[in-house]
Image (cartoon, rainbow, N blue to C red; front, side):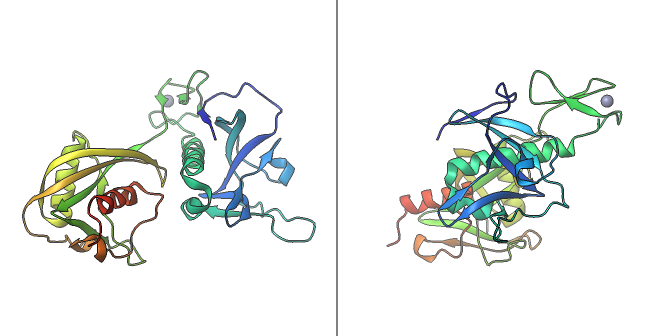
Length: 278
Ligand SMILES: [Zn+2]
């Protein structure tokens, strides 16, 4: 599959991919490992009314659009009254659609949500309109330009010998543990944010911070920067606000872990490869 990101569509009136969202859930059909997204001339083929479509690029040369389905619209039923299309959270589809398609639909979700939420100028309150030259909104009165909002966050796999720091966030309802993450604040470097977040959440110092990789994470608009680091000093002490439990885990002691869709899991899997269970 070849995805080429784009802002403006030069091919009109052609059957295209449509990533249609109801709130944050995407419309798809099929099941198990045969999940597909509709290829349509327009969403009206499914009897759906949507917001103004946004072009996101091409998939194997075919245009791809995204739009929000109006809340009142119901799932499309085929002639037998069986739901042919349904909606799902994107993360829940990860194992079926794979990383490449997950990234494309994630782009669609982010653009769709931004387009719908950025209708008025934050400076003067006048309506914003789409830029004619780039993915941006331009104020119709004062000319202010705004781009899709991304919030950078850092996520770090901290090791101590052959053990990995895993923590339970109070928001995790499924007993899952993960590595420490947090948003970068104004004026901070990624490394500053890592040191601050880890000190705030579990009370330890880290050293030898190394870049691992990054991932766009549109839930709702994060841009995750992944790192590894080593324990330096201090005693583990969860802050009790965000983190209620934390510990050092060897590969053969891991509790429930995050989805394979996330960079947190990629960092944990990387640790496992380097420190296999004995
Ligand atoms: Zn304005």
